[in-house]
Image (cartoon, rainbow, N blue to C red; front, side, top):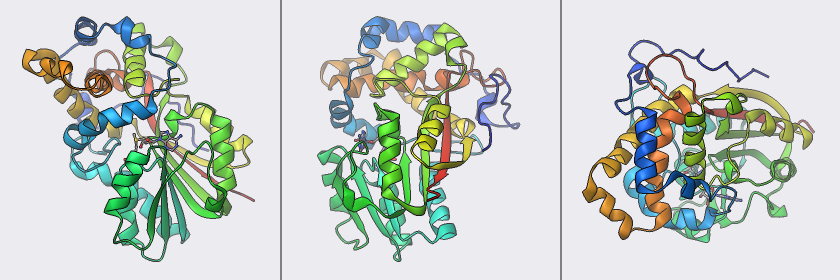
Length: 334
Ligand SMILES: C[S@@+](CC[C@H](N)C(=O)[O-])C[C@H]1O[C@@H](n2cnc3c(N)ncnc32)[C@H](O)[C@@H]1O
């Protein structure tokens, strides 16, 4: 297994990468904005509270209008550091590659949201059958409507903490930025292991706390915690090592982990710029009196994004953040 945990500050970007451009707003001023408008302590008081359902119901408008505009609810991965909407398809394209490589016929998407990934994959792979499962009936209804004409794609309501037995025998399961909501890693790992056929593969994309999270500067940790709370990751992102250990305990073999943090920088900076308008223009801030609280708090996540992954002074060399974005690939060896 490749070791993902590069020491803080060691990750340099190629010339011209946006990660080499200083961010105009220093972290202390960004935190001051958040404190003035919402109160940092008031936000952090919500740590540990399960708000997944109200968060996603209230945030739908933000995901549709501000985030991607296409029902996509994850980070765009842009390898060259320049934001490109095509980056929202990176995860699905990599899943497509794995389907082609393994000849997978039964594919399960965990936490399928508004269906963006599976809706992209199903028409490309008529020989395979896709099932998307999501906690929220609301998301399932939206995605199922878009899949009406696709015979090889079904969306259903359910939790990755308790997968229905008829989903056993999957050749491939994938999860994009959803397992971070899990309260118990071992339960999820066992459920996935049970659902995979012998030789079945697993591909996870998610955020993780760096192994040196506790020694990151306090302001950077605060940025990361604010991001976690305001995106309903109520118990905080877990270290990738904890996920790998849980998957191994469940009987899966972790074949690779990859640090993809640098690929998220263009997207986190784009969201940061959108959020900054809210904090610097009083007309945008009026929205907080009319829009639902979880939706409005996404502005905090957007503002904090670059600092949590790049550190307190983005663009001044190396990444010294508290979170990373990575992939885990595993297989069922049974
Ligand atoms: C950030 S969104 C990602 C959605 C989708 N994977 C995508 O890439 O667009 C996370 C999704 O996970 C779902 N989710 C959260 N907890 C879940 C659970 N226990 N079981 C299934 N889905 C869950 C949420 O409802 C939400 O749709």
